[in-house]
Length: 150
Image (cartoon, rainbow, N blue to C red; front, side, top):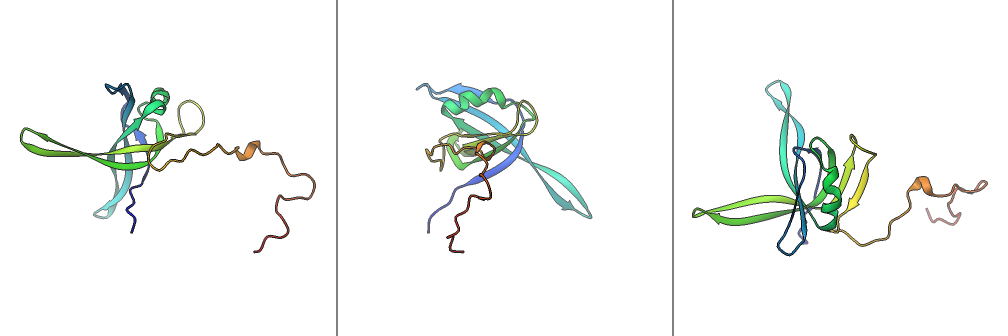
């Protein structure tokens, strides 16, 4: 069996993203998102917020940092990573989401845009044209071949 480590979340930034650089000069953009869920408490429904720390590496972190502002709705596709360390004689750990794809959603400047960050599970594939930019079929041709076997 193959292990799977894949996370997809949609939430709002809890603070502006922070852009820093490693000693080797690689950009690291960090931010947190809040994801709301509804749960039943007694006989009424209440909203509960869950908070997740996101890490975005490289050039994509540099270019997206200016758009990742508090309150912005984003979609995050990535994987979980656990950091472990020892502090004051106690073992500590923290789980973060390393983003492979960031989707800017609603609100703020412009419409939604997707950014493949080359992270977990991404592929270097050529961009496909957006459906709105494809030419319309001519005449009665609906774009399907008549010899489709189903």
